[in-house]
Length: 212
Image 1 (cartoon, one colour):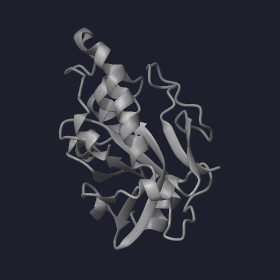
Image 2 (cartoon, helix red, strand yellow):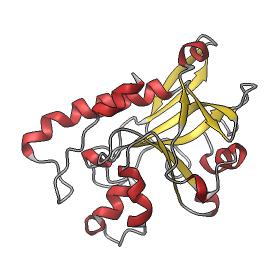
Image 3 (cartoon, helix red, strand yellow):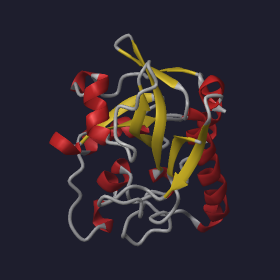
Image 4 (tube, one colour):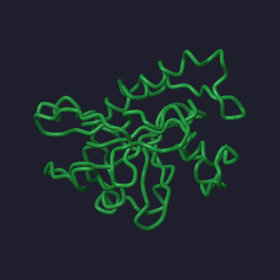
């Protein structure tokens, strides 16, 4: 399933909208993206020689018109009441061939996404939580993107746009008694999604592994 990431497509037009002829493809691409993200859960990423297991991810898919995706916000800032603060240069990494690391935000809002798929397709997974080699979570139950980055040693800008080494350990991890909890994306301290006018704002696009 990890290879299915390269079947993800960019469906929006130059104006950031999905043409009517492609609207039927949106649900298929959304389902595929969620399946791919689920397949990443339980996999291991190697960071500076240390291994961490992905346990909480959120989907952001600008390629189908997701307004919360950084690349989409920087590319179509006119769709927002206030000008987007996202750097077009920085977010260009989100349409590069993945998997690679993408960083944005400062201070406590610093976070990291795993950009996936082919070049030109805007889709990525926000890392909310991981396990260390002793199966200890680096963040709290709901995930802490910034804290997790610090504890993985991933805050340096030198990692931005660099390839991600992924090891498929999913089967072994899931044998440990984990199930997948599916919720809306995390916002303002709750898994309640976002309040913007977009069909994806209230979708269950946060997947987390939890012990039975």
